[in-house]
Image 1 (cartoon, rainbow, N blue to C red):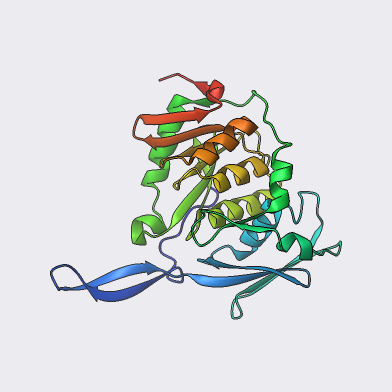
Image 2: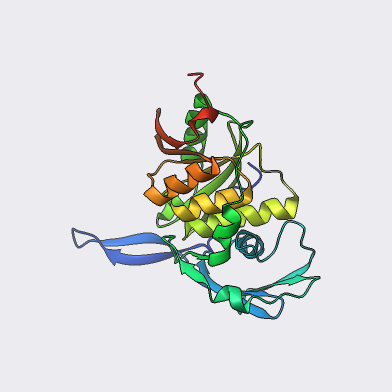
Length: 267
């Protein structure tokens, strides 16, 4: 993997003492959650709760997935102040999103995810082609590789993971307190490194909600896999966009509820 979790980073967890069910003293690793305020040029956009391991990728990915910037946007500079917990994305073209920010919709994402009203208008225009595939053996191999990777989840729990994959290989593995943050960090990395999306597979440890489907489609990735379950609106949106939606992928079991034509049964 090019990027994977670093459970040995002591800035991401804190050791806290308590007592267990037997009233014995117990030491526990707990995730560090911090506010991060994002500015686009001179305008404050949002304050997010995050583990703050990749704030610049998170900032770019959030703006990209909310249609506040595009892949063609010229980013001149990204400033991050660790003391103030502030990240500022500066673009060549000046921006103003006062009206857009009034149309915020609170989603089911952990740490309070948001989407904006005009995002759904753009979503309706996106429909994938049938060229991409995912083999059944890849689903098994990806699940095993991701589950065995040392992670903050295995160390402390209370965190979600998202993984950008190609064929049966995990490439970029990000974690955060909200799955929407993890997916935004990957989106920001992909934009920064100019990584193509149509030949990729997206894996998440969390539920296949409307927000996960919308952001995966926004990123141009045609296949979404999770070891967790579905929401009905997430399924409806996946079918609308012809996004292959695979859930409950554990061991050698899975369920496909949208665009099953991309599945190749080789196992």
